[in-house]
Length: 412
Image 1 (tube, one colour):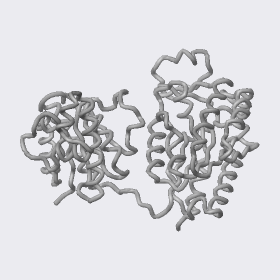
Image 2: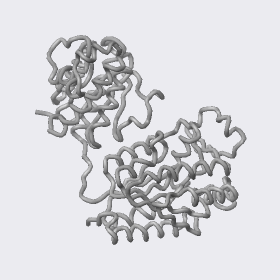
Image 3: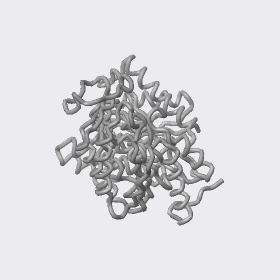
């Protein structure tokens, strides 16, 4: 038997589309399993896991869902059940990849189901609202894939089949090719931006690998930070080096480029040791093709590309960022060290640089000293974040953590 793909959807209204996906998967040598998340209607043929199985896994019943007389309440029950059932089935080794089909209701359910599965399980959401701004970043699983279900609101047609057949091939191919994460060596989760603005990862990654650790570097542009938080919550990291928490600033000042309100909290809640530095804290990234936000209309900025522009925060705004970071770190249940580079936190804010504002930098450092919780260590550096002295200080503290047993020893 080929790779087993779990196909999830409302078989009472989308039987033709779901059956078509199954036929494509079988034609390519895979096996298709079905999970019905309908509420009112009945599938034309029995599913491998019925709507009653799903509702029961969510702690309720179809009768209760119908009695609610509210489709949102009913679908949330089915979402809980689908997530719980899919998680259990995967733990039992029953399927190799999942494809969930739906409109806005089905996508709501799909987000919960995919978030319940570990990284490395191919998970595809085929949706009429794929890539929509109505999908909050904090609900996206770290490795979820989305495909727009073009022409798919009702019934099969040539446009719809083109999308569905590609989705079927994509999830089957992923199940065949995936290399799930191995845990031979402890992993360090790190956040950063590209080398034009932050450079510490160039020095830190090989040194940490030499010590026997894997290093995963996340691009902190909203989705990257969300994946970082998702994995930290799952306990995937032995420690984190969260040196680019700019998404905290983005969210604080209303940017659409956000990792959600819980950014910089998952590691602390999960008891993962944290090293923190305020890389790019002084900038708010906004969508480059949107009009400049009113609050930043007369603010110095940097147009990174056509997708992204960065606006400079003033002293009062930077004090707010320091307070937000301090509040988030106060929730930590494991050791925290905050590195504070007093000469600046991105390449553009060096003395004489295009976004340099020494007075605002001083204000941030002053507020950060006051805001850091008593449970965290503060390491002030007479250096810039991109100087060798920063990376050397990080490695010195990390080596101390190894010696003290704060982080597990690396493996060759």
